Length: 254
Length: 159
Image 1 (cartoon, rainbow over the protein chains, first blue to last red):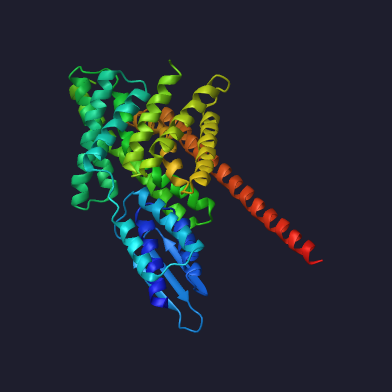
Image 2 (cartoon, rainbow over the protein chains, first blue to last red; image 1 turned 45 degrees about the vertical axis):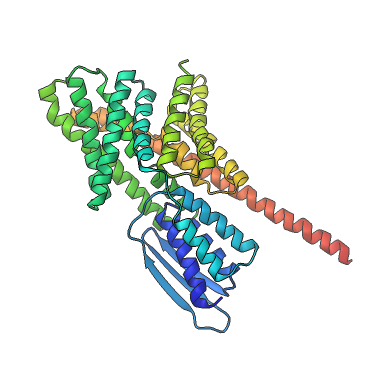
């Protein structure tokens, strides 16, 4: 395998890992392991949540450095798991370049769950958490509607590439507007429960987990970046919820 | 009933979150069980301990142990199980009430609720850190002792 092919394979696998929600230290570790297993003499890898830099040295050749900027990130843990399996596989038995590329392409095109299932999942999360925090069945149905609305809003705003914080502010705004309206119409008495239950859909669970795990692994830069992202998203949700609560309350008397 | 219902709701919510995170089809149920386990530990220890920060810490330790063990057994990343199971423990109510008190200009209550929420988040972080550091340490010690035994066997054969 030439130095060009080797660095290409490692880079492609790293990009799939990083853009689908793997921890930063996992990306560095797997890329390093792949390079060594494929016959590199040295491999230096630097990863932050938006960039990958890799520098490979082969015996008797000039070192090669590649950089890739990650522009869009989404969450698809199936791909992370599959790439993890593939990198384990590479370490145990040798493969050739063509097979590896075909494997990577196959993993990159694994379909995620269908769209209607995602919308239903959001609605269900919101309903379950409303019940979890002590709401009645009617409350949970209001939560179901809000969850669906939040998912549709997130996708519409995602299509226009709105930033994460604005998306979350609008999500919180929808949740509290609908809940205040429902309590104003007399459908429910515990508006608080509905709002708490439906903002749980916006909670950045993966960012929290990954930031803690990155900090444990000694990757403070990425860990802090992700931790601050999680904190700011929390603040954005609270700000979005606050606006209708303070503006609409006098009118609806909720 | 009062103890079982929250666990079932946590299970349902975790399962839905597993779909949102696109977790592999054969691991959906396992990861959702983690969310239920956290709530179960919380509810059971509620009978003995009244400080809820410690309850959150215990629940987090339980789900991190569950996630680490399952990750080793199924040879997949720990995040798959941990991220899903952690979500029912995230203090969404704390964030909301902090904001609500500040809107109603009850600053004292707002500050105390805010600090309480921060403490709970700290408990989640500390729980994960404790478990995964310990598991890593144990793994490294086991690997080292294995190679030592192998060396001894080799050395013994040579002499």
